[in-house]
Length: 329
Image 1 (cartoon, helix red, strand yellow):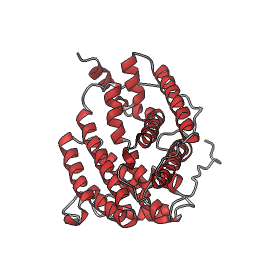
Image 2: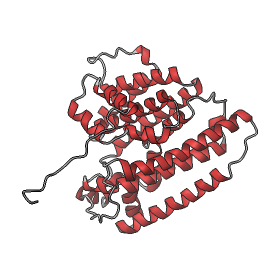
Image 3: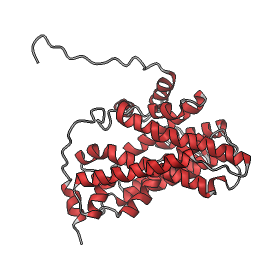
Image 4: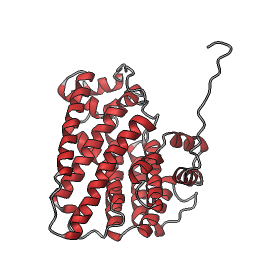
């Protein structure tokens, strides 16, 4: 750089945008959470996910989802390197807070910040949404928390089989609580969520989002030695193939899932019950928003995975620890 060159930074002129500003302030207002940690979370631009997917909903719903996204990543960052026992203690406490927020003393000396967030979020949700949607949210969020604890238990073990990996990721991807948010205004009838076509639509969406995350996050995770819990690496181990072949296979598989998803959405069956049929179409639109919204976030918004420069070559360096673990008999 010559003496006349000057490095510039782009100002954040969207800092005052309501959802972004209010969700960031919500996070900063919690006692017991350091400013540097908050700054790290904010740099990930997680509230933008809510704006991309739920921007068509009422502001309070979009804001609530922004808070949920921040909570997810607080949990992720805080539990990512903790022992299973410590993680399970936190996840079980958060599950209790989700179910019975009023039963907890939530001063800074009484509960970890993630527990207080869980109590606040479930209180906001129950006030804003229908009872059926709130129950769907709580049940699936608890499944996500169970997955977080299971992931901690599997962290230092050999790489999971693909079947085991996908079963775990269906929990830890955290999409199903977001599906509840799609239906926040819907008075869900008994049995709606158990309809085969509803489960098929949600399951297909979740699987696409798992693969999407694995593809875009692989470079960051392998650089940090954390690729043992990524679908690309799992496929490499199970098929005994190289990184590019695994990436291509996963991309092709995901492309076929997207085609299947598009066919389902374009030929959506009409359900016999009018209320279920209306809610099914709300869910369909939400699933579309999730897939397309996350694609935009990964490739255009966040710098978390460095995917804005999609033409940049990446070099794969598998972690020594994971190679050792995967070779054990």
